[in-house]
Length: 391
Ligand SMILES: Cc1cc2nc3c(=O)[nH]c(=O)nc-3n(C[C@H](O)[C@H](O)[C@H](O)COP(=O)(O)OP(=O)(O)OC[C@H]3O[C@@H](n4cnc5c(N)ncnc54)[C@H](O)[C@@H]3O)c2cc1C
Image 1 (tube, rainbow, N blue to C red):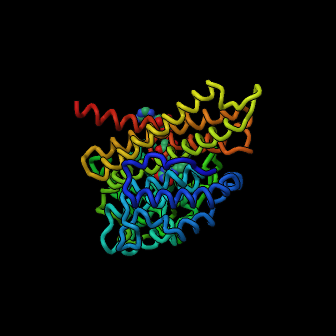
Image 2 (cartoon, protein in one colour):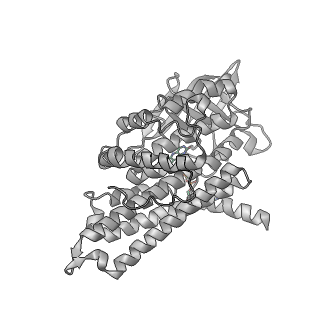
Image 3 (cartoon, rainbow, N blue to C red):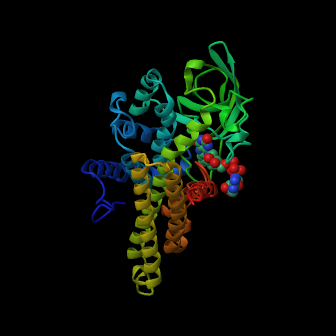
């Protein structure tokens, strides 16, 4: 499926951003979209797509030039995730999770740690995952039980994680573990530790069977006497919670971009189908109720997109309140993706419900954007907290 007419929302973008978006769009249309249905059906991580992104320097976007990256800003990364997700949400997540896992290193890593780990991530030769969630610690990370106990110049990590995207295919996982159980504030109990997944004591205990994003493996992890050098800790002991929250300020826009991409993909599929499907002797596109559905889908997608781009500019400018901007963008984009994808199925009628067409996959994929990296309820809490603090 190709996007016809002028490229959407170009006025505020730099020439480099427009060019990069166009390059990723072509890659997504020509190489990723034809694979999307099979990736969903097979439920296997698409190694060929990972290689494709590596070959075309897509992984390099959010990394500094000195680490082999393109040195691009947050909005540029978001444009790429959006275009990939428009074709295949699983593929958009490959780029989003690589950025998610790298942010703690970029935020809190020493120069030596950054030089050690970031070049492999920028080239796509290595993959990284982000391990915060546990069975009893989802929305509330203060429930984290995984502990890292110091033993000389190593930590010994015991416990486990739940729902960790790409951990089963990653070379590294940033694990958030309790290093300071006696800390007065719960937010000072955690540290962020980079774990190489080939270490003894690291085990992928299970891979979940999911509603959508089926090519993106989501793993339960078990750590049993897992020894990691203290030199793998990112930032100071007790800084883990702060690192995780700062990471979300830059990673939630990536999920919002995935959501906008899904919405755009569903909208384009629905509009094309409406022009082609005939009932009552004419294309259903001529029916005003179908036109109204499509118009609302278009308006909502464009509104979510521009809110997201504004959020990226605000976050990048460091004007404060990054957590609010990231939460607002994810909240609006996630709800938009769910609604637009559901309405796209409606435009297709019964055909929308079967896997001959892409919109049923898009509807299943859209749901996750309302759940992970903080549910929509948690985004609302963040926005309300910020709003009330200012009033
Ligand atoms: C496919 C997938 C991939 C994921 N990838 C990762 C990953 O890579 N790394 C990682 O660390 N985690 C990952 N997660 C975990 C995800 O971030 C959590 O599932 C999510 O944060 C919600 O936690 P929970 O599932 O435990 O739900 P719970 O926290 O148990 O929430 C249950 C319900 O209660 C509501 N709720 C909870 N607290 C409040 C509150 N204070 N006020 C109002 N409502 C509330 C929630 O909104 C939700 O509706 C992934 C999850 C999935 C499904």
